[in-house]
Image (tube, rainbow, N blue to C red; front, side):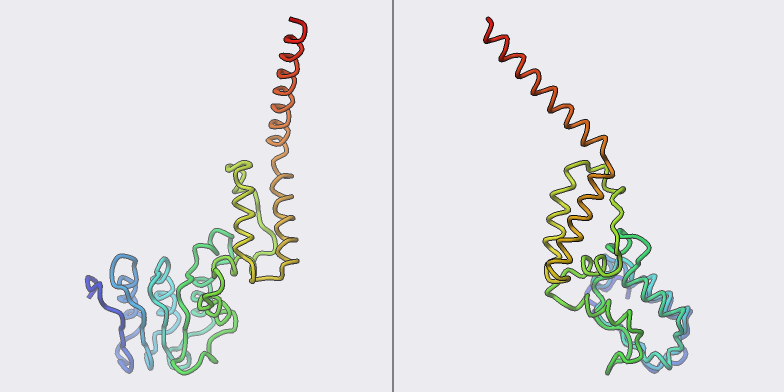
Length: 222
């Protein structure tokens, strides 16, 4: 089954012999380059937190699965398992990890409604589903109040236009006033954090201007 590139759905519902150990056989099917699964149904299977963690681990990097159906009560998933699924959808440990989170899943929980799904997961799934916005950008803006500019210093001043373009893509996620404020704040933090580079470029411009003026003076007296 792991070589079946056309497989779109796996339904293991009502198979009570399946436990967390059995769920661990599913992640290999979720890896990019193998099956292009879009739907997994696990109703009436008590896979518990270990099964939820295995699913979360298997879905890292997956860009095909959009729906994961299971009844939260019968599945035996507690805060531990939900936490793993939440981190899969939006890892807030760093901006880069948020960007690398899963932005493909649109439904996790009961087939009929997600009333048993924690609210934070519900928000992440809604952002993934909303085609009007970039889910990764939305999650970064919503979960990171301050952007650490240090990782981008290696780009030097080439990073500034990229930053402006990134905020332009975020239009519609927050108010225009809020986005402008955050953009200016980020630009200020970036420039303030690398004053030596700015000073160096200014000194280079001053030396270049001095050489040009000296050259013009020599021509005048030649």
